[in-house]
Image 1: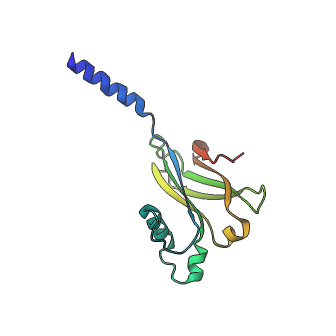
Image 2: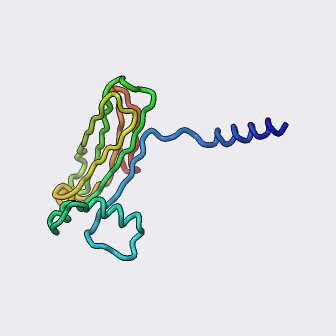
Image 3: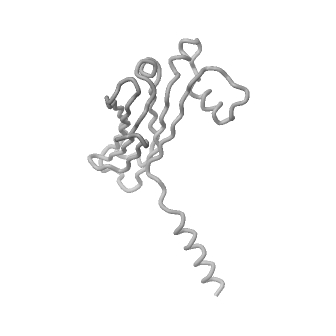
Length: 152
């Protein structure tokens, strides 16, 4: 009887876990170049990572902006076409113009990370990103999509 109750508890907990997401979007906004002593260590390290290699103040200024990291996976469709990750966004000063960035991965990839950045002149001239949509496709089939609250 103990065995059945233990198995029942395991199946119950497994049912609550739910499926893992096939697309995760992580956002980071780099607003300034200064090192603040009271910052959260995770934020400080992300800032250091984004500014790595920029030596002059002009180079560091060109790195200011918004960064998006898309983590995707598709375990079922290996070798059924290359994977295309599309990032669409709208900025404050460019009104309703939808801009698009695309990265492709080989058909053999089942998971990957795509980094997109709205930085430098694009960021200063057109403003911050107000709405975005991320889509992962294998061939013509859409695998996953995520969007911000303001995306229409």
